[in-house]
Image (cartoon, rainbow, N blue to C red; front, side, top):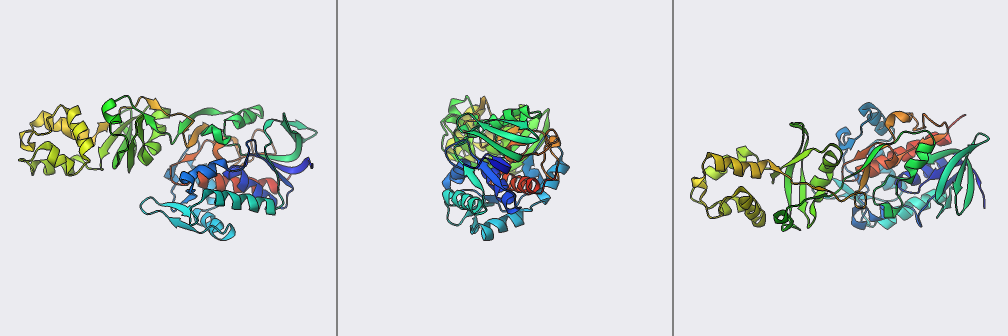
Length: 406
């Protein structure tokens, strides 16, 4: 078996597949190695097996990093979203359709396996050698070249290496964090990692009784009495706590910064509720509020307020009105913890952006090493943004590695 290549791409996820494709298109002799039993396992589970391939629209504030926002913007300018959408539509023959109300783009075939298979076929058609399984244990230097070593499958030699091993989220797909150890051995600092886009857990039995209930909310992440982010999306009650797009998007503020999450049910404000309640003085609280919110949730909120469900709206005094409005518009989500990397969609933290050249994604610590995808300290919201990041950085790393000059 051939063991000598110009470029070795480590990890055959979304970023690695894209990196291998564009490195080969640049004329390089490329090997793509994957430690698990198949390529693109996270692609396969995306969107419940339908593959939320991309967002229909993305902005700078859809992504999070502790590094430079200017570097982030610069990276996304290397392959704009419309160009990326066109690539999948025309080059991969994967026309997409937008899911109503979410802005998510899914392939018309609605099958993640088709996406993975077309990407892998394109890589192999470009002349890439694919080794799977090939678990990389270490990468060392010898005579100015890289030695990519596997305990079970020997060594591969390469002039350049693209590290695209993913983070620590959903480790059963192969992204178990080993890539961070490899990067650290090659001189990189690793910022503390944490589960992001992760369901949160809660200790309250009355809220757990609402398991399965989903509704629109406006959430605010509050840190040191300052609102650091505010969005409107769906919240899902689970038997263990809270999930849904609202919670997944808000979760990193809780996990990383210990921020408080305040909820306005259905997005209604005090300015909405005050005249509404006053105009229904003769109605019971249950009847008035459950006309706007789910009845089960209304009962739980009234119980937590210490208010009888048959109490008339007109009998609320100032203190009781304030308590009720707090529960309706500024409900502090009781969070105990999170579900961890096992179910988190992405990893926060990782390799700092300032340790790569923003024009090429080449390591500033080890010449000839390129980094892309979830390994870097960037992640996006739920909705195809993390695939956008993986594909964009994978392409840049692949093109840069193929045109690299010592």
